[in-house]
Image 1 (cartoon, one colour):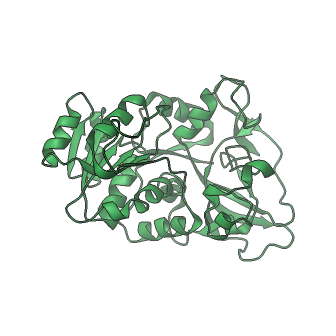
Image 2 (cartoon, rainbow, N blue to C red; image 1 turned 180 degrees about the vertical axis):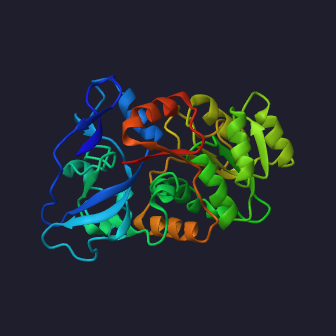
Amino acid sequence: MRALQYRTIGSPPEVVEIDTPEPGPGQVRLKVTAAGLCHSDAFVMSLPEDQYVYGLPLTLGHEGAGVVDKLGAGVAGVAVGDSVAVYGPWGCGRCHECAQGRENYCRNAAALGIAPPGLGAPGAMAEYLIVDDARHLVPLGDLDPVESVSLTDAGLTPYHAIVSSLGKLRPGSTAVVIGVGGLGHVAVQILRAITATTVIALDTDPEKLALATEVGAHHVLVSDGDAAERIRSLTSGRGADAVFDFVGATGTLDLARTVVATDGDIQIVGIGGGLLPTGFFSTPFGASVRAPCWGTRAELIEVLDLARTGRLSVHVERFGLDDAPEAYRRLHDGTIRGRAVVVP
């Protein structure tokens, strides 16, 4: 089969021919129908050799959807022909967190060498994908896999962050979304769909600000030196009850710290490498700072159910597998509007 692999530290990924995998006991093989690109992939491929821990060659793609193609021995609960999405943060399945479906916070995964597809295990940028357990498959039903695959991360991750701040997002509150790219434009929709908060979206790219308006942001602002003052003005000086930073760079984190309200939340979702000092004289009294990771299995079901209502969708640019290296180049250059999806 063909697959997109990261094979050499510092080099672009390559489309190669590799053996078609066979499912072992308890495993499920999918014929991949869609695989999403993510800035996390670009981050992994930017790591120097002494920090890279994901193994080579690495078949990319931690956002995956497919049709069940073959079952390993002992598999129950899915059938050949089912259209499914892949829940990516695989855990041990036995610890307290996994028992709650919170495999994104599994206590044992690292020690047991369990890794997500595309982030250690072979990923979905291939014609076939092995999923380690049927519990990591969520039915897609009549949802279009190409339009829905990015929801497994670009939908699930902001949903998880937003749900954990729901107590702050009452009527009359304000939420700030910093960065309206692949995850941020979905976050705006989730905020509009499940809360009554006023949404202020920030970005440096006029195209992405236009997208934020299209998907429901109440206000859009250029993320520049005047942004904090404008947010204070829009909130009558109070600040934002919750700030969702989908960039995570030093400058955006400093902006988040400046505009968050007393007793507000800062959710650092982006992996831009910035650090945020907290405590007295740094963040307002009562402010919470959190770095959420992905989301739970139950939340993925909820995200897909929300998509079925028509209130949540992903702006998608499609690429063939042969064009995937170019898609990653455009992702790196910031010229993807919404989310890039590879259709093998």
